[in-house]
Length: 250
Ligand code: NAP
Figure 1: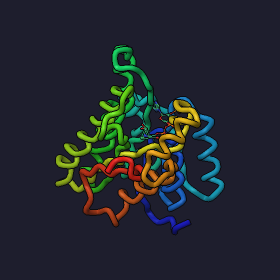
Figure 2: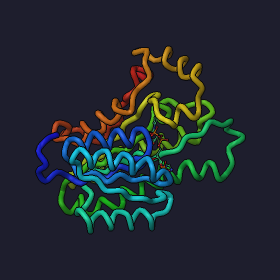
Figure 3: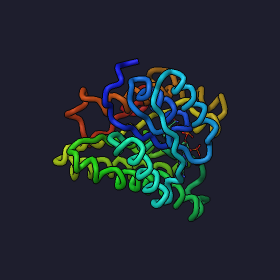
């Protein structure tokens, strides 16, 4: 583990899921104080937190339904009181669903936007004042290759992920002069519960064969890019949508 100097406070939403967990591990093992946010899966978040603590990492668990701005604001306030302001925000929490467009209900459409777009908006809005005040900060929004290309039977998911890409670009322009960088990572097919719950082994193997690198992605592949975007090596990168997809979108 690297030396624990005054590293930035990191908030990772959806750290009870596959990509969020790997991202929390990536930052925590590099010496950052990491807030692992979860919604329902307290057990998985707690298990990750305990493993990291056993390795000498500084972690904090926070529960919030990101569809509710009051819960998000209260979470960010609690973090500020405990550790100080969030300096790196990873908007990673998400949900997935496969459905014919004409079968999507009003509630399903709204929920897709509530978790992905409202959640990212509430989190970014809550952390930005202190980032702007300190003229430093990084936000990484997790989109999807379907937000770039559109996915059949995932129109609501694709639309919400496309909105995150537009939000990234607009916000990067607005807060760039204040020293805050905003980027977006668009993963391809990554082996997490989100996919294993939705696709059988045969479908996953077909997706693997369609991928130029002939492998599905691992959560760590995405975590490494998120981490890089928040380091000094990425100091001149903002407003970008970066694919981590094994060549699926070129
Ligand atoms: P995952 O394992 O299913 O985890 C999803 C996370 O989102 C969980 O931590 C979950 O919390 C949280 N979440 C869901 N609804 C929430 C809500 N209302 N409020 C707060 N948190 C909520 O997903 P993943 O595969 O790691 O995906 C992470 C991100 O990458 C998502 O945005 C996803 O769309 C995106 N992505 C994934 C893939 C892929 O192939 N896996 C590809 C492209 C993009 P609880 O479990 O605690 O409720």
